[in-house]
Image 1 (cartoon, rainbow, N blue to C red):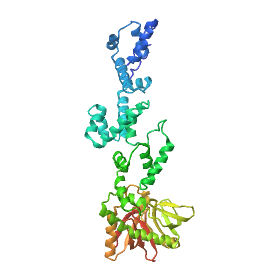
Image 2: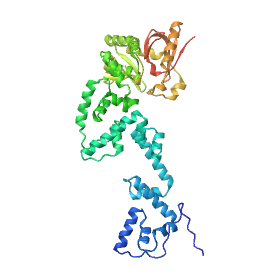
Image 3: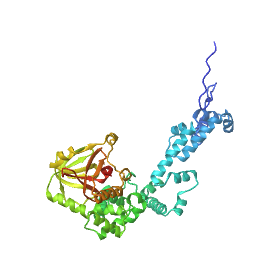
Image 4: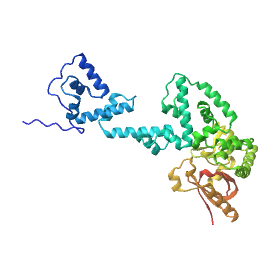
Length: 427
């Protein structure tokens, strides 16, 4: 009866010995360990070479796939000093594993440096380098100089700092783990001082400035997408210190020039006055949210992103983000207002949440133009909200952020622009 043949392994059959491995003397054992460490040979092959059974050149000729695997593992360990030998051998068995690992390393490099994937790949392939990039990009030159200074400062203190850690520090990467010698309490204290100096900045930004030795201009340079509006906001804050810090921040983030700032303040003045009247009235209002509702009274506040509240029912609320609110109306008229609402099944079926991204919202200018056309033609509007509810009424008042819609029973509701899914003029 014939014995079943062994199926070939995907990477090729391993070399099989037919005789017992020879015993090694002390000198041969040292050579075996050297071959395992310096040439990344597996122990059976290193033992055969150290015993004199074959030379290293013979090994390369007789077992090319084994040599190629060892060479790949050796290269991986040289390029990744923290990698274990076991992982290096596992990766070396299949080139696709190495390619996947390198792609992940490139993505991590791009994340930590803030560079694009294209530039990161060019650096990984040797087509570009960080020093060369510093001569081509002003922002990166600033980060690179800070990183080199950080490495020198750490060396003077007797600490060894990796270039990647220094770059993350230079970029103000708050995800960077704290060093043992970093005083978190002192960073928090300095961050609070900076927040008092620049109240329009978010606290996480001033803590970032305190930890990474950044002033307002430097923070804007290393993090233009998140904090590039800082210097301009400081200019607006200096000219308009009486306005709410978040209102000033909004104008800075919109990058308005001086004339546009004056126009924006004028356009929103009626909204601030309207909410001041609502707060002074002491009236309870019903707030319709995406995930529920509640009643509360307004407290005078010019924050463009949220309301201050008091006497909230059924839960105690002192603050409410506007982004989570679809509309609000007088609490004593809520029942009558809801009775006039209709539903758009197609919109309701989509189960939309709050539009955090401006690109998900209906364009502000389109909403304003539709309202203005309805007012000039003395016609009614149909406003469909993101939860599928729809109301028909006249535009009693509007600002750059909200619309007060007067219904046929003379009740009104205030609809936030970001909650509008569709708006049209009725004929």
